[in-house]
Length: 96
Image 1 (tube, rainbow, N blue to C red):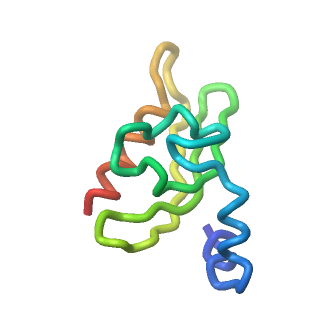
Image 2 (image 1 turned 135 degrees about the horizontal axis):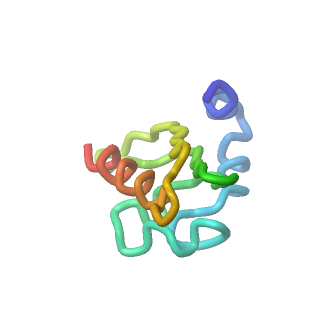
Image 3 (image 1 turned 90 degrees about the vertical axis):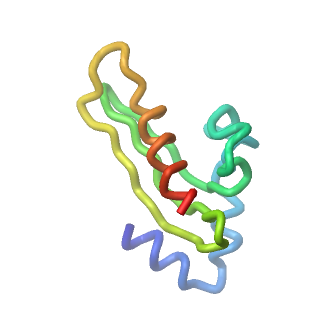
């Protein structure tokens, strides 16, 4: 989070965000958040390892605020979808 906050304060912040996958549009987020309020409004890096999912980046709320976030689903049981849990949580945050 400290790195994302620091980047947000730099003059090149917009160029940095342009390198991140966009929800519902490209990269590892092309199939996520499609048809939701976060489509095109979430810019983040995904990650997974063993039973862990992660998503960190920026999201634009309905009221126009930009939020920095890092979300992790750790020790995800077999058959469960940690990424879907993270997605649902972020949709709730963005609705605020």
